[in-house]
Length: 623
Image 1 (cartoon, rainbow, N blue to C red):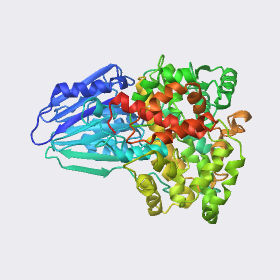
Image 2 (spheres, helix red, strand yellow; image 1 turned 180 degrees about the vertical axis):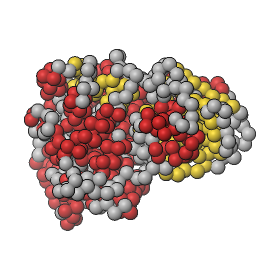
Image 3 (cartoon, one colour; image 1 turned 30 degrees about the vertical axis):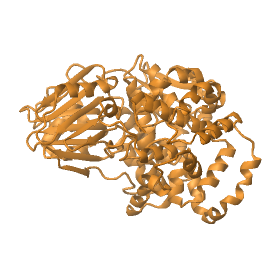
């Protein structure tokens, strides 16, 4: 695990070693154990390593025996031992690292190696034989990879902060800003910074010394390849077995691992899988809680871990905790990944990293097993499409329901459904989580506005792909979430928070073999009681205590209204520091007035604006 960065210059411009050193310095937190640099003429590669496998011999860059191919790599390959056994007849291995397996696999199979890898990765290969730089990103999109192309060079990095910190690009993307205001994150291939792009999951980028750039997909799109017949072959035990195999693969490490644990079904599945497969010796778990008990699950977590004899450490996050580390957090989530839960992830990663370099987390269960309330909302929206023409008639419900200071209370759910149900099913599904509504967006942003269709296009286009794959309306929901929300927000929050603390976060539910197995199950089984994650709960009955199975889905939320109310002066300074020629001050005044009146959604908007201001200040981003 590490961070990677580098440069290839065109038009015979020579790469300077000190520039690659500066690039590495911007991502040093991702790998404090070793820094490796390769520079030769028009190419430079850099990496910062967090040593996890083959601690003594796994440093990078890694070279082929004749020195003609050079590789840097960020991530973990879980099937590297199997691939190594296929390569043993052709290559002499000098290490036990997965890095050497990737390199020798590339020498044997060429670019086909990327499709053979089961893992999370961002890879850069300089091949002198063809004078090409090759970049590749894993099919799920667990590891980030950003790049910027100018007339004379291509520069890449594991984090966007590299570009403004080195003066390569420091202007906000107008489209990225609009995406952020609607959804609290930006959508690939776009980023928050003008002139910086993301490499799309499952894609590889080739660039030659002449400046020719080619982007291709190397992995099949994640989708339903075939269906397991419910009555003949599918058993719940098969799903448990596949999950256990995934967990076993992802616990391969030369250092101890821990578990980020909530009271939710996903991380509990990981806990019980570790225990039942004798992988929990000396296991330590880590949990985030809040001083507002309605948002916390730590009581149930403590009861369960105490009963099982598992050591748990819980960190309580208060409004004071949030503002003490606010500036550092704004630098951490460098592509505007600022849902309030980012602070939970940020702080629990800090405590976990005190004794661990590797932890497991339960990302992916809701996307694979239809566990989000948005899935249920989309199903209702599809079934009662005529309702959309008359949704305005139901606004009286918003007026009569009392304000609640918890995000996603009943009034908020009603407001969101009324606001979003006026749109097409495809657009509505991408908007259920909106931060600013269309009217609010047009009010607060004074210039460089886009249409709603332009803003959301990079998400709604996945519905077109779903149709081309012959997915039904329900299957499309999972497909779109896996390729949008999961990639651009959920996984990036965990990656940035973990790596900020030099902590590798592994996600067994997104293991490629497990994902492939789940995708083959009849969607009717997965969408039964849509929005409840029914199938995943069913297999939990074979392991869990009833209180876990029967616990209503709480979702991963944070008491942002408390933070804004208790630290209003702190956050006011940030919101009012946003440039007045871009942001309407009267709209910000209104949000503060509404927040004071107890409207939690206004507090959420103020949080997003505060983070935007902190991010632009910390990275010196120009609007």
